[in-house]
Image 1: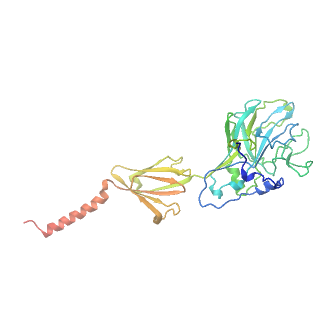
Image 2: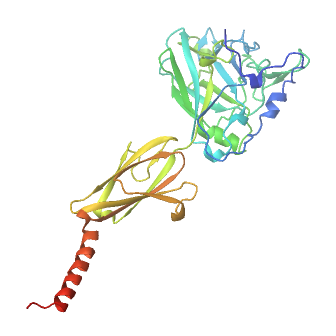
Image 3: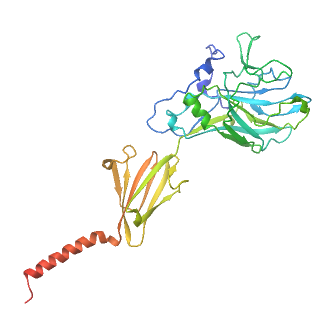
Length: 369
């Protein structure tokens, strides 16, 4: 049986369809649910996607029902043929706290190409600055009106010759949020869009979605003819959701704070080793093994492992005298390693002193005869 779309966004039979801007209006801000701890990685799928063509014969066409998204730049016979793709995501599916967002990745599955190989071309992500609808957006227009003869133009669109100029969506022309090289066919193309998503979630910008376009588009019809490799990606209309575009939100790594008592007498080895040994951090649920390695003549005393809910509070800490211990990074963790004099002399010397004192007392009471 073929998979269906996200049921959270599926229309309900018998109920009227929302107005063209109803969905967009609902997505203008991030809605954060309460959360007591960091969420696991979350993958969300677009609620709208479309590709637009600047071709003279395609600038008024809508491709919202296509099972693919297209990106290209080309000039044929004095006709600029740039393709751009639009995607909209519902940010209410994000984790409950923006501080819990560590990294956000946009992924599109590159399944085929035409008219050459676009591999290693660079595609960029731009922030869309006006609302649009999947069934109504074209190169010239951003939305259909209730009256099919009325369409809402992109602000950037100026009717002229050629018909495509400029059009193609309203977007922030000053900021490129992410760049990525096209991989070989049959691979996921990904962009790090953490900065863009954080701007949506903090209210810096309204969430009108994003655009993917070639980073070096042709815009001069007088070139007459150029190479024209076309990259085709699966859209949310594709029957298999495993190949839909997605945003993956990964929580930030957890920090491990490690302190050492009498640290000159030993070191602590971490496995796996952190990327930055000066500020060790790990992805959620990572098991970290700590091994205490005392120097010659010294010994390990104990671990003090603090409760992550009460960091630094010894009343909520556990002790472990084994030289090897393991913790799970389900939160920021604090661990203290303590070293001591080696071979147990720190215990034996006081005891030996006591024994000698007792022996000396006995020799005074019972002098030799």
